[in-house]
Amino acid sequence: MRRARHLRLGVNVDHVATLRNARGGRYPDPIRAAEMAIAAGADGITAHLREDRRHIRDDDIARLKQQITKPLNFEMAATPEMVDIAIKTRPHAVCLVPERREERTTEGGLDANGQRRQLAPVVAALSSAGIRVSLFIAPEQAQIEAAADLKSAVVEIHTGAWCEALAEQQSSAAEAEFQRIVRGAHLARLLGLEVHAGHGLDTVTAEQIAGLADIVELNIGHFLIADAVFEGLSAAVKSMRAAMDRGRAGAGER
Image (cartoon, rainbow, N blue to C red):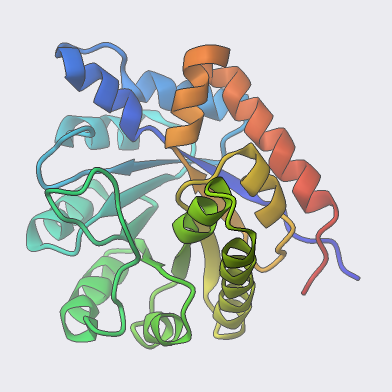
């Protein structure tokens, strides 16, 4: 059995900006949070620039690109405005996500299969600009195959349904959702896609999913920022990194 590759941790700093925006002004600064997360063991930083700028702002994206020492993963909707910003900013990667103004957080995966015509020119434009493109999708065969057909470099599997079933103590539903993730991650890797995962993860679920060798990166935000209120951001990131390492230690190539 071969040793599984290092599991990268991407820390999402959106909700540091949420806290800043609740009062106005410049504090707390999401760029400082990103630098602290990197110092504590994060392998990259994720930030979602929404249409309504409810948390991350244009200036945050520009400063993150200029100042952080690890890759920037720019989450965005597949709109002309966001494509222009991404090409101007040139982050390491872009993750295309569905977006609705009325949602509190991203509620589901992108319908890559049903929106191929709209997504194809977006993926092509970003890829031509040297930006790695990821699609945030449910672990469904049709969605994964669509991502491969669209020539996305990466898929990020939406783990929200699994995490919600666990939180509601629906054990059979949680197991079914986890098996969907297992199958989806394996199919994606077989199709040549790099596989990431995220949404709703905490230290317990991150440790469990870290055992899937097909997945090479977890992107985690809300839990880490919430935990930082009690433990401090550096401690929260270090605790998450340790949980992921524990889970990875038992992972082989599946």
